Image (cartoon, one colour):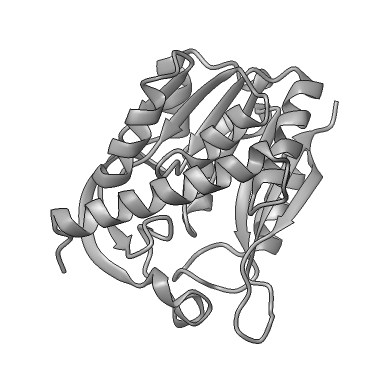
Length: 249
């Protein structure tokens, strides 16, 4: 498979249009997509005094932009491996002195890896996609493979001088979340808050499912703060959700 410049451009134009529409409706205070949930996250950050967000799996910057529109004015460090999505992320972050883009995937250890590029961009993953995912989101089929650099949470924390006790670690890596957590090492229990995309059905081959992920977080002293349901299959069965957990003080 190959991902030519025309397809990359189409993906970026599509995402830019979605963001523009979502942003306009957000300013009208309408409940659009993840807008309301992002405001809940921003309120949690403000209430807990967290001033840094590690945005792992940033795509074109939707999450960071949503936080800004929700009133969060702290530091954002966004990691995105794909060249096309990263170009859009970098363009947005360039306008914001407290938003730092990093062109890399995040995993268990540093190196390089092949990532499968999805037609909708944001479903791209290092892991193979299952039929259950394709049935629930037919526009997510893989169309290319790209070789990317890999860093770790621990490396990013050291590079940017992050204080985990004042930081939200957000992970949206399409089934690769457990590997990202493994790369945090002993830092895992020290982050003040974590936001993760979890799956109730295997959508990517070999991924850790929601029950096990939540159990790991509980073992490290986290409790559920809020949850947003994700997409479902044609029968209405919930496949994914976003969970926000915080440390018990």
